[in-house]
Structures are given as structure tokens and as C-alpha cells.
Image (cartoon, rainbow, N blue to C red; front, side, top):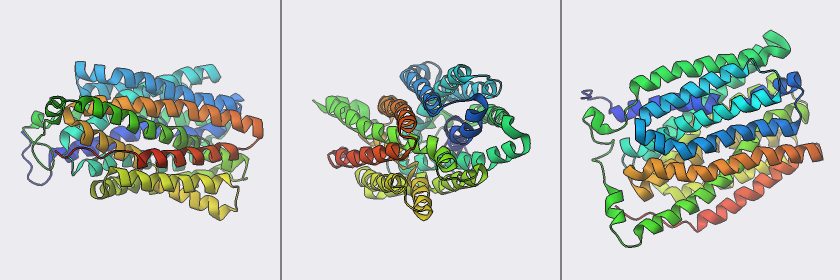
Length: 408
């Protein structure tokens, strides 16, 4: 039994979750934007191929989302997360030896599979370890791991490329792969599947058994299923848009705006620095204002960020876009992780989060591929960013129609 009177073990789980997301998404996904320019030059990749590499990662992620719930049910969330991290770290280390597009593509699909196996159960643990009034903050704390990883890669990768030359991207992939494998050991040691494993109740109160009581009410189960589809559609629009910005903003700055790679990397690190506060800030706001109002606010911010970069305005507007995006970037996953627990209860939270992540994954698969084709055909990423602004405006409309969860 956890004896400490100073900190609930749930916060140990959340801090470990921050390290998990640092590895599985922060390094496994968001390092790609920093590695693409030099890797693309070395391997002679065009924009469409760059987009397809990102899309391949999301295909792998989506495949794993289908499997994550079943794997977690069989071996538990703790070991599912650890397995996913092994796959993330191992595949990224192997990318450092790749000699062409197809090798990178296949290995990055494997990275995506590992990312899903680690991320989905990790976010689902929020509803087990935290009560409704604390879920937003806990999810936000975990999501800040993504921001820390962006700062890390934004500073690390340009330095490696400067010191090691055109093939420095290989050392970059190897470094983040080995680091992810190290985090696997941390996750396996500290994570627990349930508060009961430590003889505890969730942070903020006793466990609630919402799903059994919900399913006993006529029509309630179907109502929640419809709401999960609604949430999934909103989440899909986030997936389709943020990933275009995260994947191509550095490439656009280098190739279209004339920034040096080191300077672009510094701006990417700024995105990461601001995003460290994104999850905790908007998780706290959604705990206070409600999930619906939180989503309306963040989608308005995303729309503004995309418009400012799409309009090809002077550089100060680009800087404003970067700042807004960084501040808002992890808000939607934070709010969604908390929302599924609000609607379905802890026992169904992992499955429900996996379900809406299918929509999110579909958006991610589409976004980079479409953006890459648009850039090849137009010679600029401007049209892709305009499309992102249109899609986040649609998300605002869908969020306005979202019904509140039942009081429990």
C-alpha cells in the first residue's frame, strides 16, 4: 500500500505518463518535423513522400488503436504501454540505418503502432486514477510531455546536424530511439493499472461505477455511443489539422520563408516551450468551464493560428501563429481524455478513448498526405493551412451542438 501522506500515487502515475507521452508521441511523432528537412535532402524525398511518411505513422497508430483495448484487457495497461514503448524506440533507432523512402516508411509505420499501444491506455488511466474534477489537470500534466519533447528535439536536432553534417539526421533518430527505450523501464516500474493496486481510491474521491448504472438506464448506452461519435468527429478535425502544422511548419519556414534550419528549430522549440503549459492550462479551464466551452475556445485559437500563417503576412504574424499554436496544441487531447470519462465512466474510458481516437487517427492519416500533394501542386503550403482553418471552423460548429454529460 502507498503510504505517503504528501502525494497521492495517482500523481506519480500522471508524472510517469508525462514521460510516456514524451517518448511515444513527443519523440515518436513530433520529432519528424525537425528531422524531415535534412532527411529529405539526404534521401532525395519530395513533399508528397514526406507527407506519406507522416501518413504511414498515423496508419500504424490507427491500427494499434483498434488493438490497444484488446491487448490492454489481456495483459493490462501497464504492460501494453511498455510494449508500445519498446516498439517506438526500436523502430526509431532502426530508421537511423534506412537508405530509402520505403525503409523509412515501413519503420515509421511501426513507430505509429507502438505510439498507439502506449498512448491510448495511458490516457485511459486518467479516468481510473482521477475523479471527474481532477481529470483535466491530470491529462494536461501528461500531455505536457509532448511539449518538453518538442523543446528537446528543437534544440537537439539542429545541433546534431550542424556538428555532423548532412547525415546528422541518422544520429538524431538513433538518439531519440535509445532515449525512448530508456523510458520504457521507467514506465514498467512506476505504472499501475488501478488505484486498488496500491490500496487507494482515485484522486479526489472514491471510485464511481458509472457504466453499470448507465447501461441499466433505457437508451443511455445508445445515447453515449452517439455522443462518442460526435466527439470523434470533433477530434478528427483536430487530427487532420494540427498534424499538418506540426509536420510542415519547419519545412515551410526553411523552404518558403528563407529561415535557416537552426532558426526554424529555435521557433519549433518555442512551440514546445509554450505547449508545456497547454495541457495543464486547458485541462484546468475545462475542469472549471466545462469541456464544451473549453473546446470552443481552443478551436477558435487554432483557426486564428492557421489563418495567420496561411495568409503569407509579414513575419510578426507568423511568430504570433507559432505562439498561439504552441499555447493551444495539446488542449484538445487533454479535454477529450477528460470528456470520455465524464460521459462513460472509468470502466469504459480506455475503450471509449480508443474509439474516438479512431476518428482522430483518420484525420491524421488524411492531413499530411493532402497537404503534401497540395504543396507539390502549388509550390507552397499556404493552401494547406487555409484548408486547416476551414476545418477548425467546422469543428466549432460541431462543438456548439455537443450535449452535456449526465450529472453523476
